[in-house]
Length: 339
Image (cartoon, rainbow, N blue to C red):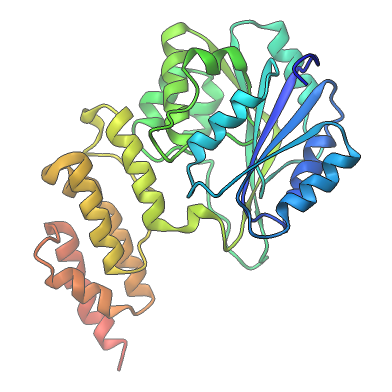
């Protein structure tokens, strides 16, 4: 394998994706791009995921399966292992439960990168794929975010997006020069999270070195929404993001940082988030970081008639002023709705 000339390395992390991994890999193979190779790392799946990948690999010489005991979700370390195993000039990232869109223009993307040595990467556009047609689809591309991506300005991405809110830029479908990844020393394996920390460090590097990026709205990747998606675990997602914010985002941005759609299901999760925020940011900044998320959680609890969570927030001495006022204003209508 090391002696084979590979232009694009597709690296795929997977865990218990037996329902999805076949379609994921077929979407990569359907690009019909040569020379390309797919490296899959199975993180200790307990279902038939490794078997499905093995069968595909036996019928197609462009797939290599790596296996390991479950790492507990250390996606940054797992992504780095895939980078170390692969060796293509360009890297395309994918997750085992997602897939590329139809007619993904990989050959055109590689031609674009070959033609412009200052172009570091090409970003595709995301589409959500739901299993339940009645399920509401999240809104990702606001006018402001689209304008930022269309600017192709790395500094604007940093200042106007990555330093202000949870990243809406994902690794999946990104095609990037391996040399750029090596210049930023790959993934920070001291963190669990992969996308966010990597992307902040990446755009810092692009801005400092005057490399460009391209947002290709005709390239699509499909983000599958399903019950087992790890990003649906709110407290885990908060803890992953908080680690990145504390380490990579300048302190002056902490106060107004937006946690977007993170909603906690229980008051116990709120307390865990508070402890994480206090540990990483200190008491003062920790409270300032969380008040919007706590208000969003209380608003969600009110809509569901969850007066227990609202009462717990109201009576807890650690609840800051704005969430406390919101809880007080919510509890009486919520109580009336119960009768």
